[in-house]
Image 1 (tube, rainbow, N blue to C red):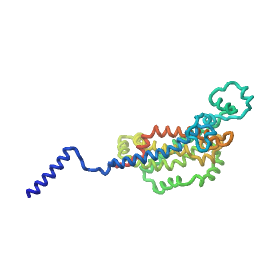
Image 2: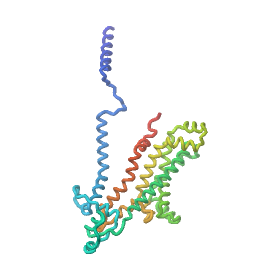
Image 3: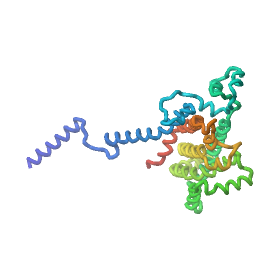
Image 4: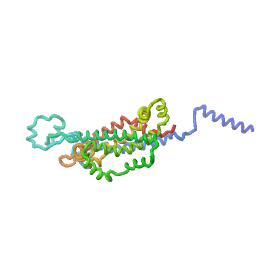
Length: 336
């Protein structure tokens, strides 16, 4: 018995000494180990580098001259040129050297670049109008689809809708259809309604495609908002609409922002419907950029320059709202 007591006291003293020394042998099942953190960091860095390679290559191509852009093997070291950006925003015409010498001095760098190649700038290109169409159509369809989606999601979340599950599946199924499956019917319908090659027609079409995604995403966010908040507001005298506007919407801000980003990305990048339904007045940038033609064929520096500028608005919008996006993606992941 005394031996057991001594052993126990020895063990207790050893544990107490370890605890007093501040050394813990416990291991958390949640906290990652140092090795797993290093592996995860290496994977993230590798993935980031792989995804950045195309963007870096497009950026480098945009500041190359046309001969350097098609050279083989590809040039990594080259003399930067703004010719691609000049060709993107202007239309040029080849002239004789005598005619070029008779002109007044060049007004800017693009004019000097054109004259160095025995060409003159005759007009502005259609890139800026197409870029403006993309802005109007993408922002308009995003506002409309998110506005309709948040109201429909609130109704599905708070009210007893007959056949709710079937309706939700039907709404989601519209997102599963490939664009080519409905392209011809939509084209014929738009031609009859006079919506072909119009901004309104593209806004309505993109909104119809995006509203299914908006309803599904926002319903999940609204489901996580306790009903008691609205009930307390209505007890205080608020109507259902006032409770929705002053209680639910502020709570669902992160979800609305995350949904808006996804809807904007789709409308901003959409190509198939834009090619089929627009050709002039309402044409967006995606179908316009690939058809930028230079003197000897495809003007790759101008195409790359247009692509880089086309990336800027969606990149800025996402970076500015990245905090809401991250919170919206993880919203409801932890149960309280």
